Image 1 (cartoon, rainbow, N blue to C red):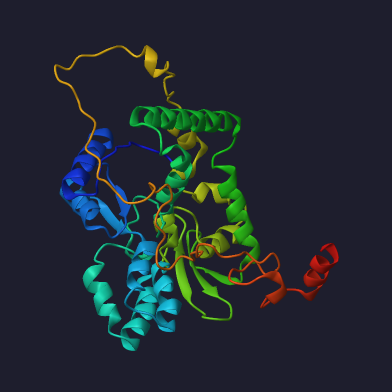
Image 2: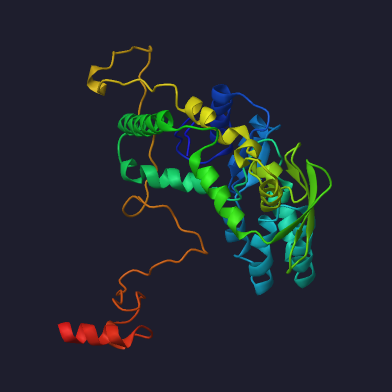
Length: 355
C-alpha cells in the first residue's frame, strides 16, 4: 500500500468524485499506463471517466461478484466467473465465458452492466499490476478504522504520522537490501521453479516452445529477449510466468533476476521512499491564518442509532447474527456446546471434565 493523496467529502456524488479526481490529477498528472480500479458505484466511475478518460479503468472483481450474485446464482458461475477473471489468455477466458453464456443468459447482463475491465486477459501490459480486486482499499480502511472518530484536523494529522512511520520503516529496510530485485520476489520465483512439470523445446537461445506435461497439454511460446510469453502473464505482471521460468532454468548461467521488470527492483523501492515526510508541531502551535471569511462546519445529516464505525458487509460475506452464542467446540453460532452439531467428541469430554 502506497498512499498518494487523500480527501474527505460528505457523500459520494458525481460532483464530489470529480472534485477528488481533479485533485488526484493535480498531484500525479496522467502518466502513461495509469490504471485505476474502482467498485461499480456510478459516481466514482463518472469521476474517473470525466477526469482520467485516457486511464485504464478496471472494476473490482469482488464487488462485481457481490452485485452479480444478488440476481444470479448457480454452480456454473461459481466455477467459471472467478476463473474468467484470473485468465491471462483470451483463449482461456473465452472457454470460461462460453460455459457461462451457454448455461444461462445472465452473462448478457454481465456484459451490459459491467463494461469496465475485470479480467486479466483484458489488462494492458504497461502498468505491471495484475490485481483483479480492490483489496488495497480495504487494507487502508482497516488501517485507519480506529481513528475515524477523530476531528478532521486530528484525523489527517494522525494519518500523516502513520504514513511517516511507514515510510521511515521501509526506508530503513531499503538501506539494508542488496542486489538487483527485491528478495521476496526472488524467493517467490525460486519457489515456483521447484514445481514445474513442463517440457522446453528450444527454437533458439531466446525463443522456445514450452508444453505442459499431462493435464491440458497447452503449449506456449516464450521469448526471453522481449520478455514475453503467449500466456500473457509475463507481460501483464512483469514477473516471469512458469513457462518463462522453465526456459530460464534450462539455460546455463541464466539468472532469473535479469528477466524481472524494473518496477520490482531495489532501486525503485528506495526511490519510492527516499523523500522525507516533514515532522510537524501540534495544532496548537500552528500559525493563525485569516482568509477573510469564517468557515462553518458542514451540516450533518441526522441518522438513527449510533454512528457506524465498521463498514457495511456485502451480501456474499458471512455475517454473524446479533445475540447468538458461539460454540467453543465447533466455533459455530446458534447452539450451545452440549447440543453441538459437529466437533470432536474428545473436546466434549474435555469440557465435561472441567465443568
